[in-house]
Image (tube, rainbow, N blue to C red; front, side, top):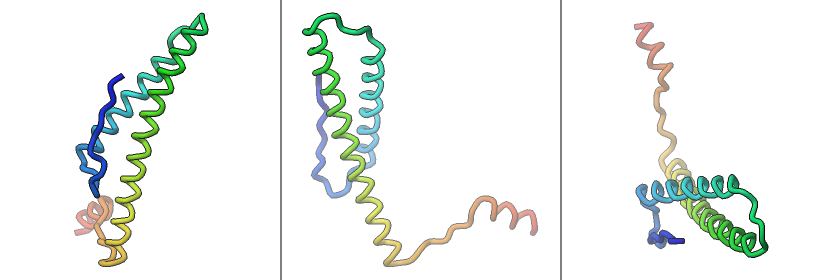
Length: 104
C-alpha cells in the first residue's frame, strides 16, 4: 500500500492540501466498504492478512481525519480571534435582499 505524504509542518494548511486529504479519505472509506463486501476469509492466514490490510486503511484514514480536524480547529481559532478583534461583518441575507427589492 502506498501512502501519500504532504508537508504538514505548514502553519496554515493549504486549501489544495485539504482537498487532497479529503479525496484520499473518501477513497479510503470506499476501500473499506469494498473490504466489507468481500466474502469472509476461510483460513486463519487469510483472516490475518485481511485484518492487517484493513487496519492499515483505518489507520491512514484516522491520521487524515486527525489532520483535518486540527486544521479546522486552527481555522476556527483564527476566525474567532479576527471577530473578537474587529467585530462581526454583517452581510445581508438573500431573503432580506429579495424583500428589500420587492418593497422598493
